[in-house]
Length: 399
Length: 198
Image 1 (cartoon, rainbow over the protein chains, first blue to last red):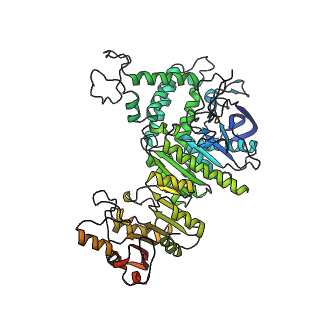
Image 2: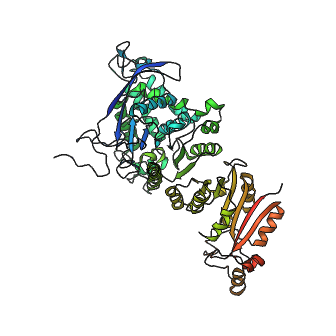
Image 3: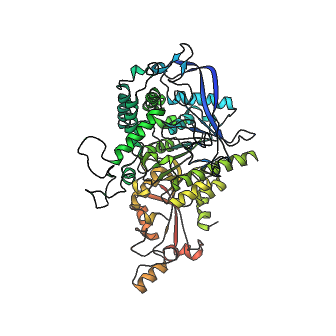
């Protein structure tokens, strides 16, 4: 008996691999001599190839954005909330492409791949890639798929940064830019958190200068710590409070527990786990460390730190945006403290200065930065209506 | 089309840039887009209205006018609209300054508190008027800065704002010769087209 998926789910998806023989010169000046990009597609490409939407993933994301990989797959893709038949990114209307970025660890060429010139793992020798490099490689994938112009390029967080880069670097290839919970560049605080993550990885005894795969090990503790720190920044204080504040406790029977649920009901008076939030973070970190490459994590955080599209325009973001000819939808979430609404408002301000078509939603949500992955009604409604208009536009253009 | 919108659209140049402060469900901007091919952007804080704008394909920015408009460049729009929102703003005088900083022209509409119905209601009942176009009680009204046509004229003089056109209509948005003669007494909604005095 085959598994029945909900009618709004894309079902079982088989990832594909695109191989590129061309040399890709990177922002750093280094180059990659051929590479693979692994990707998935959902929905059907129309005959004029005008209904394609590109999904750009965030720090720890990959190509598996929707559906399942097998009948027994317990977990759906990372953006299953938003991608599927009748969902915000409606696969009845759009052909959706989602890839694993260069330097990733889910199948695209990255530090955990074998360097064909040496026959060994790239490891720390894999060049640092930037958002611009990703977008250039995504444009190569677009060529391969025969997509001249994306109906929309969509992404949250680091994915939103790729969306901005698309709008600026390839104005003729993007009709709509949807940029969610992003920032025009990282703040010192953002970089500081990334540096803590990097230090915890590189200082792990099993890091071996990045050559841990050759040593048949991996920096589990470091990666775990990095993820724990990151995870804290994805959640809001209130989201943690409600997640870990269900039980009434001995020392806080008032009901106002600020998420201080105990793991065992009593204090240990030792340095083991006392509170639920501690074991939750450890669990999250542990699971992540088993599935993610440490060198990729380092690369991704650097791509974040380096992102600054204003840099080619004397620091003037509005001049960068003047290059764009697409329409923009910007969305932010009230309790996001990683990239708070103020950062999205900066984007809005510069888009206004550049006289671009723009809509901006500032959504009240308790769930912090992670909100962009969650079914928050106002967010989903706005997202869905916007894309429904995009579909109407392209349908009337074709008529 | 509502007659007040008909009046407003006459003052809008085709293909111009229009900013609508408190754009509601985006009807006016949508109308101006279809009729005048304007490049419009609306500001709104009501979630339901914002959703309607998005569904219409009207550019909308979720932003509270009362928290300032400093993210808008000077002289970046041809016309800045403020329809039935002046009386709900916290600092109407400063808002008018902002409108004429951002736009070359401003179009402002507001309920005329000097209308005879308001006067009669206050005079006879001794209570704040509640009517179809001012449906709130004094304590829960979003309209915190009511003014009359005469008040607004006086503010324009004080601020050295040039009134290019002024018209009044009733709550059905109809105007007539009598309203032209006694705008502050008969007009229920005032519509002003203003600019900076050079």
